[in-house]
Length: 308
Length: 308
Image (cartoon, rainbow over all chains, first blue to last red; front, side, top):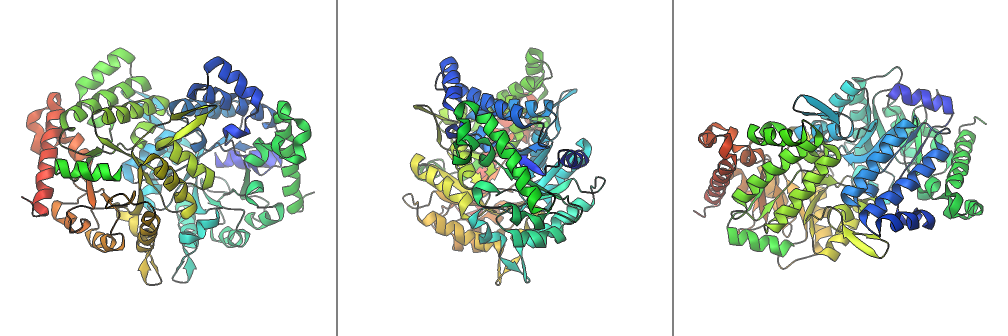
């Protein structure tokens, strides 16, 4: 799957992932009204609205991008009905040829981590049959529990030819509280980065590992260091756009082959129509606004990488 | 909810939580056969088997214990159908008067952590209505992202009078890879413990905080230190039984008031009938074996605490 991701990035010339993180306030009124008319102001109504909203965006941008990253929390908050919208979104994106990165930030120990890996990347056995649970292509994973929490994911990735992105340095303002603390002169995130490189060495695709990392666009200097610590790991970079990261911050996340990083934007794309810059589209054409925002993001990143 | 937890622990004299972590291999054949006969060897069949299995255990032990801790990964691996079994289990346990600790180990940043908090502890708005998603009483939370990841949970806890347990020192063998690393002479888990105390100071129940901690029974010496670092935090202690922790390891997790810790056992209780010690019950009476195992665990802990 890492090979497929690299190919699709090269083909689209867009090292971009669109974060499908639907919040009710992003969803245009006409979609909510239609869903609520059918199912009421219920969890099912919300789920239907989310699904229709996502579908519109995916239909408008799928030919421009290699991957999407649904944030499961935004679905999970609507309970079972929300998880149904999550699953429909994952399946639909795959039908459209997109790679799906499940932003689930799971992580536990031993058999429990294995269950999470199975839930999101693998197959579960039921009697003589086996079934995929949510079946994303990649999942994000939290490293706090150490190797016991990571290895079960890696085992499932090997079986399924899928991948993970491990949180190394997150994009949020308080990520430094623990991640930046110095241990023998090096920050914790660097120690985690070294483990990512170690875990990843054992599961290589053609040029990159199945084991990637998450490093926030909001910390470009750290990205520069981590790029060297994990030369074979793809870096998933959140924090572009709404969180403050810009194109020029991203240069150091890439390797000299022009690969090695994929930049996420969520609300900057999916709620583009709510920004002044794209207001001309109006809520009715929210998906067209998302397409325009994707094109601008591709342009911004290409410019920053000197590829224009 | 922390007050209710303390009350129930005092009333039952059992500082115990039963981990409802169903694995297919724990479920007696007669339950699986019945579920598969009705729904086939499908995700729905698995979900039905899990639910019937859980119900049997809960019915057999609910009067002895204050709380249960379903591990969501064990349900999530069965996809939507698994999450339905999770929700049924949560609801049923609450009906039986049990406190439900959702072992979800979620954690993200800002609005995403808020969505997770809403998913598991709070209410989500849909139009003019609001609904609970999964509606546990407590949730476990991962601290790697710092305050940004924790505060949204605390805000929801305050609104809902619910609580969280933050991972401090986990019970697994590799937990030390990052958690034990020294930062200015103190291990990371102690720094996290200090933050737990700080976060918790702001949301006190009568004698304990709504913000608790997870510290593994497998690390009793660290538990002793952390008990002092977080005097007002309840400590949820996994790792008893199957993972190797014993009654005498647990003493230091408690405060002098005899409170402050709640010990989890999962497979040691729910799959007791598969142990030699309880084999006499047989698979047909698996729930009675679980009851016997709970009584033995209460006895072991009471003995260790010198309360016999």
